[in-house]
Image (cartoon, rainbow, N blue to C red; front, side):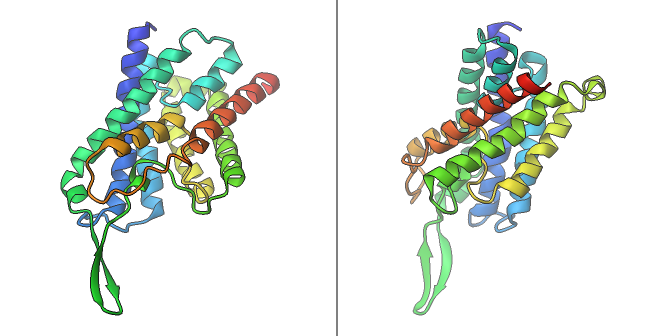
Length: 249
């Protein structure tokens, strides 16, 4: 694969991933969305389908890694680092592009960024927080616990992905990406509660950058004080998974 193919493939695939993922979060979160308040299960499957669409689209060009943690895990296992920077750059650019596209899809809803809440004095308008549409927010802010959650959840993603490569039937049938997408759904349902399961540094960092600059009314903070955890945690998890796979298989 040429550097150009890898970059284009990762940009397109990651953009599709984030378009679906940020899109489902916007659908569930924003006022005047038909899917408003439809819940965590909807979000988990939306992200899983984003992996499905993005990885299958990118696969012919780049292999469809779409995640720096996966890229690092593969590099540690194989010892091939020469093209890692191309993957990482494409993934970050694609994540930013996907976040912008999701914003444009829900532009009218973002512009009407208020929610009605009953109070003892009647009805008040309050802004709907928007960062959770783009990036992760911990349910309980505890840096060590949040970091451990992201590390473990990312190992649970990357180690099976590496092991799927040993399953000959998956490769021959072309269903590896489908199984990975179901894995992502499972991680969201089982391990996503504490931190919102970034498990992908580009997935969190790119949209957070975009959230900082988008003209969203009443958008609130982009929470840069927390931003290192969904980057460092998944990178550590990917490295651990790559080392474990190389040692055990």
